[in-house]
Image (cartoon, rainbow, N blue to C red; front, side, top):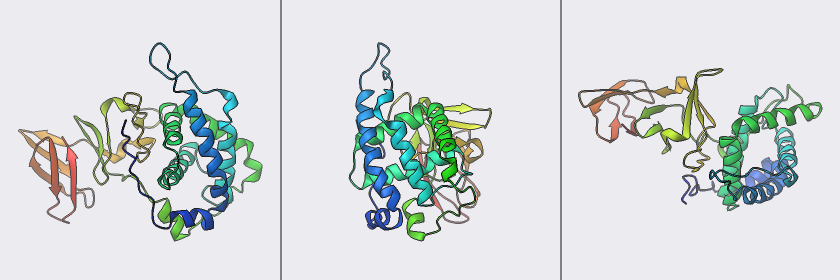
Amino acid sequence: MDYPFANTLAKPDSRLIFKNKLPHIDAAMPEFFRVMAIANQSISQRNMFGNPQGIRHDLGVDTALKLLLVACYQDRLLHGKHSPLAVAEVLRKLVLQWYALGHSLQSCLFFGYYFYALQSQALYVLKDISQQISLLVDPEQALTQDPQVQSLLAPTHSNRWYTSSHGVGDKLFAILIQPQDATRTDLPRPGYHIHFKKSWAFDLRAPLFLPLAEVEEPLIQNNKIITSCPRCAQKCRGTAFDHLEITCPACQQHWKQWT
């Protein structure tokens, strides 16, 4: 199976950034990836409904996750005020960049399964671990502002999304979430919970949760589509083909989207 994130390329200096700018994470990540690869083997067996059997508690996933979180605090990527979802988003970017350096795909698949399909459980574990190590964390700790680290953990998606018959898509990044791989929620926070439970095509470039305020529903009438520019919000009109390439008449921003 081809995974959408599988061709992610590492930045030219990303290995040195891990080593020199994020030394604690650099030391913790190999063990984290090793444990996740083993855990992925443990869920490869399926039950009579075709679903994973579950995660054995003796695999050491929670312990490896705790060590990585401590490393994130030590390297000033996190502070005590981060929510579990915000912590998970930092981990997602780290895992994607570590994979791009040539590390295990199987580890990424387990991370996707755990943090997308089992998101509620994963966030609860993150909250519990954060409470356990709270005495080691300075809640007022300043986050690193190193430009190289910021570049390494640059956004992998935009905040300009749209709905279509093909699913939920990103206007500025080549990410499309199939309709069955995301569930719209109203409470406690309106948005889309991305879980990939239909395709299992875990795309680590996509967010774990997409706020409803960032998703536009284009207006389609009489074979015409009205959608807004992701840069300046100018209303743009065009013929509603299955796949569109649009250029904003106001700011010349170019993007693609499905209908």
